[in-house]
Image 1 (cartoon, rainbow, N blue to C red):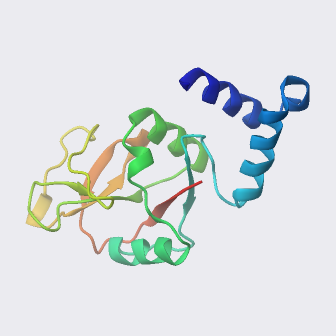
Image 2: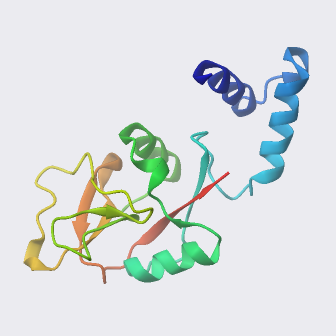
Length: 160
């Protein structure tokens, strides 16, 4: 199943002549293209991504994502490789991710309710100043804890 989805994704991504392959692939390609706003980046992990229009606090960035029918990125970016792809494609400086320990210090929870975090930037999380409860992307897709009031763009994620 994985290899079939990968093959279909490659055909869709590379806009190959899927009609010569099989009609089912062409149908999936048409449906995917119709369902995705071209202003969103689609790495074919089942989600699409877009940066908020402005820099905001973590809470305000999340609100802007939600107004677009999305949320701060969580489910699809738990893979470090996916974060690196998104980082390179969107040329993100720092951007808010959907991860925080707002509710309980040191207990990181993604906005989709899953606990845990992976691939921290060296020396992180450090809760510098005792006030870093929200997480942003740092260089190359690593994670960094930061003050929730800092101003960064948010990385929005929504399911295709």
